[in-house]
Every structure is written in C-alpha cells, then in structure tokens.
Length: 434
Image 1: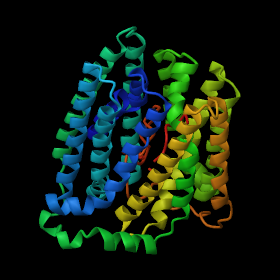
Image 2: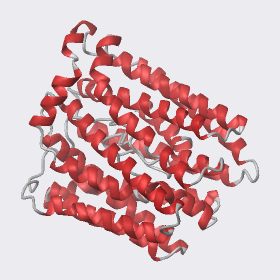
Image 3: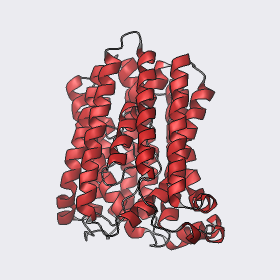
Image 4: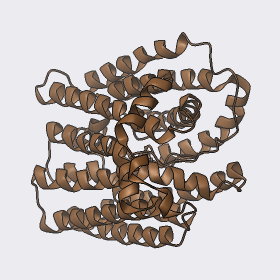
C-alpha cells in the first residue's frame, strides 16, 4: 500500500504534467504527437522481453526494482531538462522513452509477483483499500502540483524543477518499499530455457481470444486522434490558468474514483460486456461534448463524464481480458494486447498531429472526428453474446500493465489495476477526462 501511494505521488506531480511540461517548453502539435505515443509504444513492446529479463536478472523482484530505478533515473533527467530549460525534442523524447521502457519492462514481472504475494489474501478488500489510498494520494498530489504551477507566475519551469525533484524522491522511496517485500519464487526456478520469448508469444497469439483486445486497440486509435491535444487546447487555445486546468482534471479523477466503486454492482446486474458497451458509448460522446462548447460548465461536465465512463471501461475490459487470456500465458497475452494498442495510439496521434499541423482540421473538428472514430469499434461488442455473466468481484490477478497513457493530459491510476497505466501502473487508457 505504501509503495502504491508513493507511486501515485510520482504520477500526480510529474507524470500527469508531462504534456503541460512539453507545452511550456514550446513544443508544437507534431512534437506532442511523438512525445505522447512513441514512448508508450516502446513501453508496450519491451514487455515481450520481460520473461527473458527476469531470467537474466535471476528473479522477478530484481527486474521490478531495476525498472523502478530506471524510472527514477528518468525523473532525474527530466529535472535536468527543466533546470537547464532545454527545448530539444530529442533530449525530452529520450528521457520519456527511458521512463516508459523502464515501466514496461517491469510490468509483467510485477503482475506475477503481486499475484503470488496476495495468494492467501482477501483480494477484493485488499485491493479496494489499496486503490482507495492510491486515488487519494493521486488527487492530493495532482491538486498540489496544479496549485503550485498556478502560483508560479513567470517561473513555471522553475516550478517544474521542484515537481520533478518531488517525483524523484517519491519514486526512490517506492523502490525502498519494493525492496521490503519478499519474492516468493526462488531465483533458481527462473531459467533462460523457460524464458524464450517467441514460442510463448506464438502460443498466446494462437490460443487467446482477442475480441476485447481488438476493441481496445481500435478505440485507442480513435481516442488518440485527439488525446494528445486536449492539454494544448486548454492551455493555449482557451488560455486556462494552471489552477483551473488542475481543478478540471481533479474533478475527472474524483468522478472516476466514485464511478469505480459502483461498477461492481452495475456489472453484477447487467454483465461485464453490456457495461463495457454502454461505457464505450459514453467514451465516444466525451470528445463530442468538448467540441460543442468551450464554456467552463461544459468542460466540467466533459471531465466528469470522461472520468465515469473511463472507469467503467477500465474495470470491465480488464476482467474480460483476463477471461480471454490463457492462464499460463497471461503476461504474454497482455504484452500482445498492449503492443496492438500502442501501435494504434501512435497511428491515431500522428494522424491527429498531421491534421492539426497542416490546418486540415481545427481542434473542434478533430474532437468530432475522434468521437466518430471511437463509436465505430462498438460494432465489435454489439454482435457478441458473451459476457452476460459476472465473474469474481475483483479478478484474482491485480496488475500493473505498461504505462500506456496519454502523456499530453492528466491521468489517474486505474483503480484495481494500477496501470494502464490497455492498460497502468499502468495503463493503454487515456486520462479519464478524454
């Protein structure tokens, strides 16, 4: 629980503001598209190598700690970029690539480690408490960071230096918490011969049901047509100050936390796939609300709606993906799913960046196009007759998936799967407001 809260602080004060940091450095739409997708794609692809890395390092715990230390080093690099006011795209992209690759490499190992640590635990209660603490830590950290940026005046970059320093300390402290937990799998059980990537990945591809994964992949394309550009839209086009920007995003985090607590009862009555379908409708409507008006009241409604529907998407899709994954190939299945989604994110963001940079579409037109592109994948769910049963209240595996989240806007830790940040600690899903 302590490690999760410390990680949430890091997300709230630094990771959630990476898009705003890039805007402050002067990067335009095309650069933002690259910064919000290429690191996430790299984090997804590197997950395929996680079994091999576990074998090389000798245990899951060592890989997880190494990944967390890699993220700590990346935060130090971001600190240096802010302190030196370095506006180079290459330097910022390299720092973010290191951050997401470190998180992706450790994600499957963390999944398996957490599953073994909680095998004799009442998981629904434990993870409900842990997720609640994480959400509270995230909300407080995100709000405090937004307030600090608002009051920074002309010293915004200097404020980012302080925020990255806080994130560095929080992530380093979370490494200490990770070191305090035991790895129940003896190191000698991990052999290189058992960690071959290609055969297990091929089996996962042939033996798994990718219907929900395909839906999430196509949804990611439609979402990331617009996702990287909500932050510059609010900060540049609408000229919102950081206080308003943080308050709006905090509203979506709070709405997401409240909605997630209701998902179990709703899914128990209507079924996971039906809830996912209706949540998908809400996800498609969210950017359309953004396109309708730039009034603050409408933006508040869009953030609250986004938080609620993304909570339902994350809750249901995670459990449905676990239903479709072979029990002995869970990590490989999610690695493939995340790679598919990562490619879709890159394609969507690059298309959106092209349309904006060439003045082919305005922000409002891009948001409308994103709404339409999010609605089309619903056909994959409407024709299915599965999912009317409700499995365990919370599945027995609690996972951090690759941090596949849009960096261009604030995000929240996925309750029940600290993703991601499809999934965070980590997760493919975008910020709840998007």
